[in-house]
Length: 165
Image 1 (cartoon, rainbow, N blue to C red):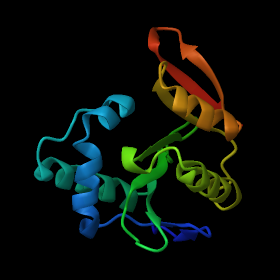
Image 2 (image 1 turned 90 degrees about the horizontal axis):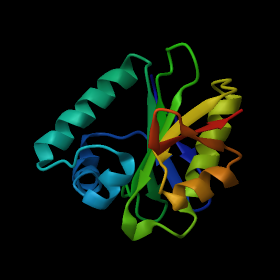
Image 3 (image 1 turned 180 degrees about the vertical axis):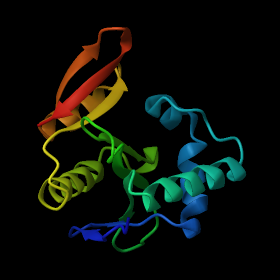
Image 4 (image 1 turned 90 degrees about the vertical axis):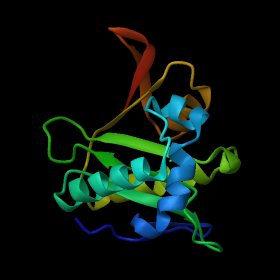
């Protein structure tokens, strides 16, 4: 699946590629960020390279669609956002992260609002879900501002499911 470039006055949302490997490894080797994402920290650039290759393969099959988030003036990936499980029954899953160096400035809100608009208008998605840690207050505020509604998972008090309809 081709990834269309989406633009805002301050950001580019563009396809991820091998030239983004250093920036992506910076994200996936950050223990604080990986804890929030509830994924394993990448110890080596090779792990990140393999994860990117797997992602690009799933994207080519139409299973997911992800954008790198880059400030317009630099075009260096500082985060990502996208949707997984596009071909499965139920609603696709939103995944997102931004480098701690670029948090608290509204860029993730801008990126997600732009991506969600594309998902609604172009992909005709009417329901999107995401899972976050129950203690991730920044994500809760962000998702609330984007009209998601959250609730704890019944089987796991450490995680919440948030849904946007």
